[in-house]
Length: 96
Image (cartoon, rainbow, N blue to C red):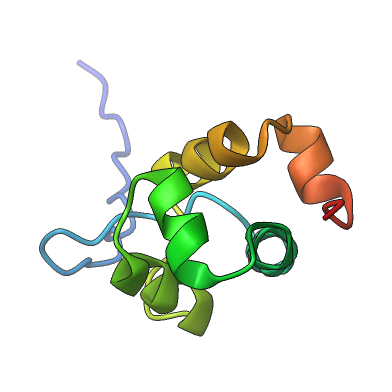
């Protein structure tokens, strides 16, 4: 009979109920928010952009202020509204 060492797994960081792990790095989130400002310029206003993305304008306000993490859903909605690919959306300035 042999003994095996069993190591305890480090505790997982606790998350609040309903909170998701971050999808993007802080730098990617910064670039996405910059792309959203470019889309704001292209659509003319936050309510117009929110309507094109099929979300409420409050959701965009929370996203842009940093109170809400960037989700995959928001990325896909921005891509569909703008007609841009992920690389084009995150790559640089959005043409107006």
